[in-house]
Length: 315
Image 1 (spheres, one colour):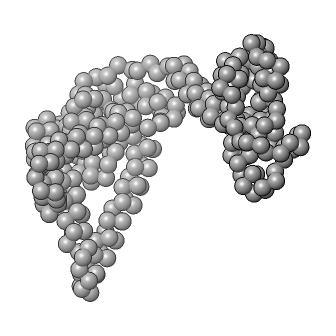
Image 2 (cartoon, rainbow, N blue to C red):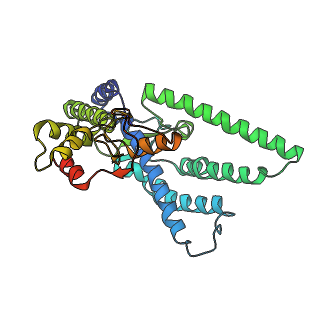
Image 3 (tube, rainbow, N blue to C red):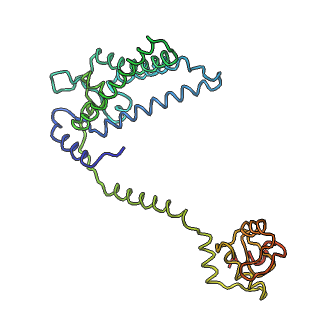
């Protein structure tokens, strides 16, 4: 996730001014903790489902919301409940602080806050998934109304979450709506030294990344083989061939019909060369086709001599 340079400067200045009271967490650190939590949940779920690969397909489909809720309950028990921090926060030296307390010193979360955190996070996701399964296949009028109310409530919560995220970008506290409602705030476990952020490496990486993308876009447009053969034909003459073969080798640089480098070069008995598909399609269309260069009739359609072709390619 890309965060503008302005946010880094604001975060460092804010951290210096409040170092004596609390240890505020940078916005980028809070967002990183949320991403680490999501990655851990995906990893736990994938490892759990791998245990059921040998069973009948869909064995967990009917109980998937309950199984997920049980796994998230175990994670909550050994993270937020016991350590006042999620796994992502623990990795980044962050923990939750009871922001409802009047003192500036660190206060751990109360049991009520931990239980409500469990209800909002684990219970909310379970209720959303289970309600969707219950009312998705029912066509009763009452079920449709309930489903409409649930969709309205889910949309309203998402809108509130968006507003909370915008406020978080402005204020730097309460990254999620649950944290704001419960009054729990992310703080550093230990005082953090001011990070000296240098952008020279980042600018250099962005420059080389853009240059690499330009080359990836440009290289497929260049016919390297044709360019190599063209340069070779200019630099090195074809030797060891008879006069007729030299004439044929000189004309085999382009198709007499399309004007491009001949693909699967063939001859019709004269000294000119054609692409196989060009000459074959013209012969099928016109039984009395003649060479457009010298007017010779088609005697026999033969591939270009192996010695001439390979000498031209390696010239």
